[in-house]
Structure formats: C-alpha cells, structure tokens
Length: 159
Image (cartoon, rainbow, N blue to C red):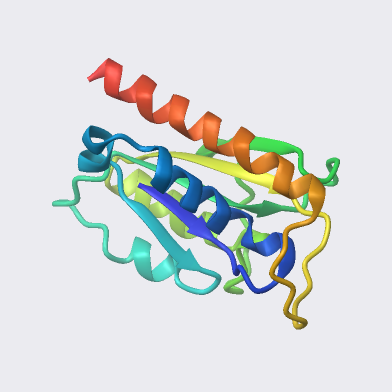
C-alpha cells in the first residue's frame, strides 16, 4: 500500500497527492493487481490503519508525506519504522509524527514492513488555499515516484 497523507489545498502539503497521481499513471496493469494507492488526506491515515487486521493482505506500507527535518526544501528522506519518532501526544497531524505510534503498532502487530518517503516542505499555506507546490517540492515528486517504483519492483522480483 502506498499511503498518501496531506492536503492538496495547502501548497507543499499536497506533495503526496502529486506523487500518487504520477504513480497511478506509471504502474503497470500487473502492479495494480498487488499495489493499493490510497489518498488518506490529512486526517484519515489513522482510519485507514484501523482497517488492518490479521486477515489483511498488506505486507508493506509506504507512507508519503512532507516532513520538517530541517533539510533543504524538496530534499527526500527515507525513514524506516525503527527511526520514526515515538511521541507521547495524540495530535492528529502527521507532520508532528503522532501517526508514527499507530504505524508502529499496526506494522508490529501484523508483521507489515514500513517505509516513509518524506519530502522537506518549503511552504504550507494553511489556512490559505494555494494549489501549487513550491518549485523545490515539485521537483522532488519524480524522485519520490522513482524511489517508490524501485521499491515496488524490487519487492515483486523477490517474491
């Protein structure tokens, strides 16, 4: 599952939606049989995760979102479950990483591999509506897509 978290209405927060749209165009018919592309928006990732159980066929989740790691705008950082922050609070904003606890629990409980493709944001316009990504973040969409396609295709070849 590729799980996009963000809001296309708030500039760079729409990064994951752009990645998902491009993946939709590039996945082969065969890949579409075993890869789910899920736009969870800004507030629904927890609900998507709540659908996982012992009967889930999901073996890997790739979360796509913007991050704030003090990197250069548009820089991509790949995080694995072990390196996600473990916050004590329960806010519903993935940019503060409270989702990381739910991701860890679901992945541990159901033996699901997790990767996070994070892109350093330059500008999030919330509450103002800005539909365009900044130039730096727009330039990172292809890098994220290529990384995800490699991950999908390498996993397919392992099975």
